[in-house]
Image (tube, rainbow, N blue to C red; front, side, top):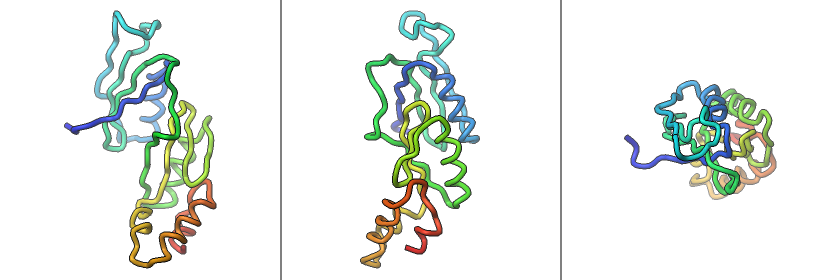
Length: 153
């Protein structure tokens, strides 16, 4: 068991959200649904929580209320080895959401995602003193990241 996990506070419709994420990450699975008789949601056909795994990471979806919303201060990073992977996750997660700058998007449920090449961290830590700056400049000029352009930077 992981020492820590992530709780995502949704404003209803957690079953829809979790099903969506598991359709994008086919290796994911639902671990447990919890239906409460005393706590929200008012619609007792919706679970209060869903524990699930996605991309090897444990999550809990919480059926909260509208007092809290997701912000870009929290994002889920997806590390991709190929442009095809970048395109796949970008295309799936951006449906109904908003495409942002630098490989960021917000999905239809309000969660922010970073769809990035797996090599990005190594490029920023390069012993070539100008490489990190060139890569950062290239990233900042993009919406969806282009792996070949970043490799050439």
